[in-house]
Amino acid sequence: MSPRLTLHLDRRDAVHRPGELITGRVEIVCPESKRCDELVASLDWDVESRGEPYAVRGAPIVLAAGLALPAGESTVVPFEIPAPAGPLTYHGHILTVSWTLRVEAKLGWASRERVEARILLLPWTEEARALTATSYRTAPSRHALVYNPGPLPEATLGKRDEPKTLEHPIVGVALAAASAALLVLRAGAFARVFALVLLVGGLSALFAHLRRRTLRERLGPPELAVHPEIVRAGEVITVSVSFKPGRPEVLKEIIVSLAAQEVVVRPSSEPDEPRHYRHSLHGERRAVDRARLRLPQGRVTVVQEMFRIPLRAPPSFGAPNNELRWEVSATVRTADLVSWKQTQRILVHPPAP
Image 1 (cartoon, helix red, strand yellow):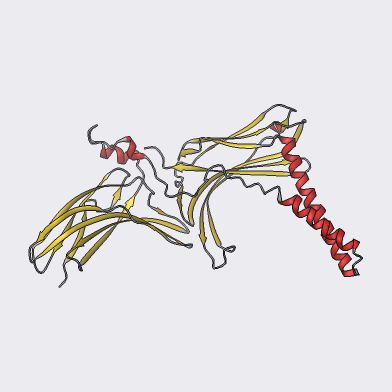
Image 2 (cartoon, rainbow, N blue to C red):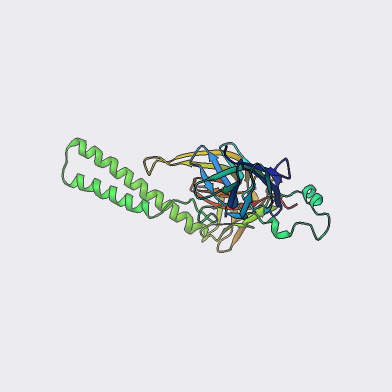
């Protein structure tokens, strides 16, 4: 018979809070006398989703070393492991984040025994903190409430969704030049029709670029700002859109929105064709009243809107190809229907207990 390894958690519900001690014991029973070179534990988290799964293996923690195991007797090793700051356990619609406590016993050079148990890592609440804080000496420290959302993508904050303006004049000039070349060379009827199509496409691209460039010059250009960029659930953020027009302007509309969604990517065999899955968790769209759409010439005009992050909002989370994303966006349309849009992501932490 092989050695039997059993993991017992002191908390039967396996619910733990960031910074709290995960306590329990490991029981080892060997049918024959052996020596346990090392008893190692680790806290690991995994992402399961419709996209590409992801896993992070925690740093190994040595619970015991050089442990003598008598034949047929139970050997118990207690442990205390601090719960990590995050990411929190999350069961969503298209992605799931789970924590696992794994323990491995190294019994000689060729023998390994492993056991694991699921851990629920949940945010602090007033009730949980009150039950834990029996005195100021045993209360969880404030730094235990710091939240780690996981490996968020680079440049999470301040992402712009504006198209690249250099592409439009280049494409427009190239299409117009190609059409002119076909007409000068006295091509056939089919080639002349094709040249006219190219000419129309080139002029349209140039016109779209000039309209967008004109919009940026007319309005300042517009700038989107969010304060604060890192916020707890239940708190308020202020969204500002600033303008400095070169002449008096009256905008048709300004739309400011707050949204949260699960975003999962399944890499494809073709590098340019990944599959994106999205599920909306929160959406709030607000139109600025028409009295604030008048922009005086040469002065900085700031239009502000305030949003409260829902108290039960799921916190931000990030991992390769898996993300729970919170973002704010602003869309501006002029009277001649030229539009501008900018998006900025924010980090949402769990609510303060």
